[in-house]
Image: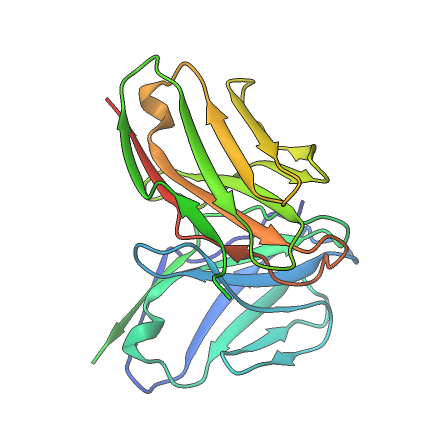
Length: 110
Length: 114
């Protein structure tokens, strides 16, 4: 399982873009990069995932470095509801098991 | 679609007791995983059930056991409770074979051991 490293916390103002970095230098060629977030008093929820190419969905964008040793989750316009702990996870292609780190706690200020 | 539902939401036990937590997966999902989340930490994988059998297991003692029923719902049992078992227990469901897809989590059962 790929080990990931994230900053403990980050801050943003509302309606500004947020870039959440993640290092995963031990990731294998078949590990997907998944991002989940956990809002207060809730279970984790899926945000986005990718393998090699950059990915976009309604919630966020995922930029993956060419060497796949790092990635960045991009929230284009932060809202107060985006305040959560964001987890970057390297997931083996043949397993449902997620290995969570301690994540990045994102604070969003009005 | 009700999503993943867990019960009870909160419970208090004393050391040495036993506890059973329940999970109903999202409609159409056949795989259930359990996670333990201590305060301030990320969730830790306990085990996963598919076709009523334990398919994968994390680094948890045998006091932690589980079961999956024919309707895909699942139970997590913890025997001989310790103070350190106090945590949020999360259930996640998925459809086996979709390994690059998303897992759906319930809101968890918060266990306090006194």
